[in-house]
Length: 446
Image 1 (cartoon, rainbow, N blue to C red):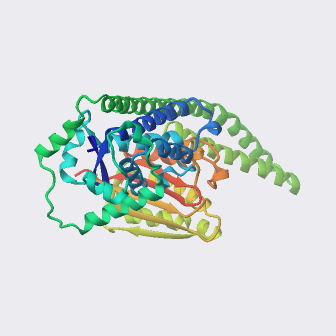
Image 2 (image 1 turned 180 degrees about the horizontal axis):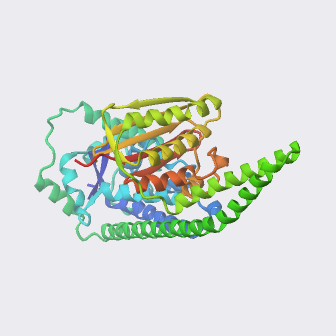
C-alpha cells in the first residue's frame, strides 16, 4: 500500500472540491519544483529585464520537476484550469518570478500535511479520492519504493484527462455523500508526522512565504520612494521653469500687439501658443507634485459621468470610437471635488480613446461595491500595455506610445487627484486585449 503523507486540494469554482492523496515520493518532485521557483524569484530581482526567464519556460520546467506523480500532475492541471488554462502565466503580462510566486502561494493553500495543518478545515469540506480510485483512473501502479518515482512522465494531456474524469465522477455521485469527519482528518494528516520529506518541503514553503513578503515590501518601498523623489523634482522644476515661461509669453504678446507684418505675427503667435502649452504642462506637473486641497461635496454620479462623456464625444468621433455608459442608478451620489474628478476621468478617457486604433469601444460602468464605495470602470478594446509600460504608467511624462497609450500627464495627474479625494485608481491590461481602469470613489458620509 502506498504511504500517504498528505493531501492536495483540487478547487472548483474557486472552492476546495476534491482531496487527492499525496504519496511520500510525490513530495520529492514538489520539493524540486519549490526550490526551482525560489531560485527563479531570487534571480529575477537581480537580472536585467531582457535577461529574465519567461513565465512559459518556468512553467514547463516546473511541470518536468513536479509532475512525475499522477496526484501532483492532476493538481497542476487543476491550477492551470482554475487560472484560465494558463492565461495567468502569459509571458506578455506575467514574468517567471510572478508566476512562480503565485504558484507557491497556491501550493501553500492546497497542500495539507502534518506540518501544515491549516488546510484541515478545508479537508473536511472536500470529497476525498482514494488510492484505489486514482489507480483506476490513471492506471499507474503505486508503490512505496522511492526508486519508482520516475514511473510516469505526468504529461499535461494525461493530467487534464484524469482531472476531467475525476470531476465527472464526483459530479455523478450523490450530493449527500458523507465528508471526512474530524477524527478521519486528524488520522490521515498525522500519517506524515516525523517524515523528513514532509518537514523539508514545509520549511521551503515557509521560506518562500517570507521571501515573497520581503520582495513585496522592498518593491513597495522602492516605488513609494521613487514617486516621492519625482514629486519633489517636479515641484522644484515647475517653480524654476514657470518664471522664464511667463517672461517669454509676456514679451511675445507685447511684440505681437504692435506687429503689423503677417509672417512675423504668425511666428510670434506660435511662440505665445507654445509658451502657454508648456505652462499648462508645468501646471499639470505641479498638480501631480502637490495637488490642491479638494473641495468635496455630494455630487450626483450619473450627472458627473454624463458631463464627462459629453465633453469627450467629439474626440471619440475623431478617432472612430464609440462611448457607452452604464450607471446602476441615477440617484447615487459620491463625496468628491467635482472639478478634480471630472478632470481625472477626462484624462483616463483620453488615454482609452488613444489606445484604440479605429472603430473600437470605450465602455464606462458605475456600480456600488461591497466596501461602500462606487466603482467606475473604463474598459477599452485597444492594443493594451506590456508589463514594462504598466510598471511606469503613473510616472509623469512617461511615454507609453509604443503600447498605444497617450503621452503627457493624464494618468499620473488622475492618480494624484483621485487619491486626494479619498479614492483609488488601479489598472489591468494585456497586449492585444485592451485595458481596464478602475476608479473607486467614496460615498457621502451618513
